[in-house]
Image: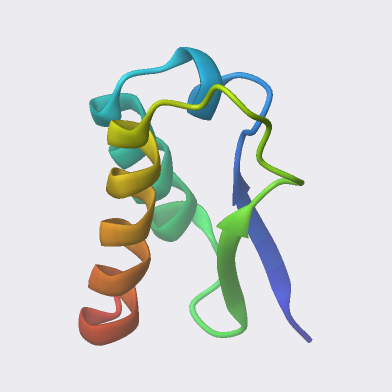
Length: 69
């Protein structure tokens, strides 16, 4: 079984700061299952999301892919 944990595309990505994106990713990983966690976004990313938030999201994906929990 896979659990999809997604950073919010309606709240965090368009309206949050990079620190909010990082904090939400950390929360999802810490509170998600020990195995079978698929980290992503909750739906389609809308136009207008700041590049800093997208960059933070990608950096978070890379970090958790290489370092795990």
